Length: 347
Image 1 (cartoon, one colour):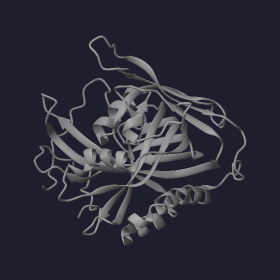
Image 2 (cartoon, rainbow, N blue to C red):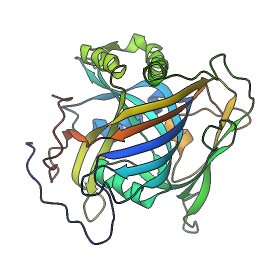
Image 3 (spheres, rainbow, N blue to C red):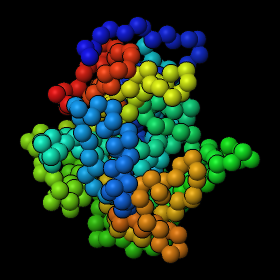
């Protein structure tokens, strides 16, 4: 389907969403690597991406590790020329990230491009929720997040979400505790207190992630495009995010528009990166609306906790750019605006 011009979006008098690109300044991310089940993660990717246009694109989970992040963004604002002076928001985000490859080859055994999929994005801002969902297809939900002050890695991280604890006619939708991360010990690895600059820090962080992919190297080989992408990250650091964007019909059972979207998060400045093997422990509650343990294939210890294998903090600024359409379901309606180009990743 060709990329045709769509109608102008109608902005009402009330501010419901903002226009990209978006500046995300003074972002402080806490990342925790936890091991999931690769088959469970692949089921997520098959459901959300591989059935959109199975004859054109195939995506595969590259590692069983999930990056569970808690991020405070102190200054988020639109960079659109008509909205740049509106103001800014402070946002807290909690996201489990899945590392995904766009595969090529007869057996889908070569990694052509690497993406990061935010499986669920819990935010404390209605404007961020509306904008992320409607513009990109971010799977955003309302969440109440508690996390340490900036620069403090020892406090408690917790998330409560607006959800059904169980499914039943008597269950009321309310905020229920979903996730908690605590630090059991302050004894870290030898590089726990090391700080790194813009390129050195990002190179270290990306190197850790590439190591995870290498652990499963027997299953994959890197296509030249993937090698080129990894090399370019050290010069122009960014993360290519992957989304499913769809518009339901009036029954909620069919999609008027359905497409795989990508949007780069381009790193503009890194103030510090700390890497640690401190003794963190993750606890996830059972929740009917968000069955994360089952969906991600996480393994609980006898005390109901989930092991954190690696942790890092990332103090940086980034910009989420205008997205591109990777591939669209051919029987869907609608079209992208002229400002969004068709991605060549599936061509």
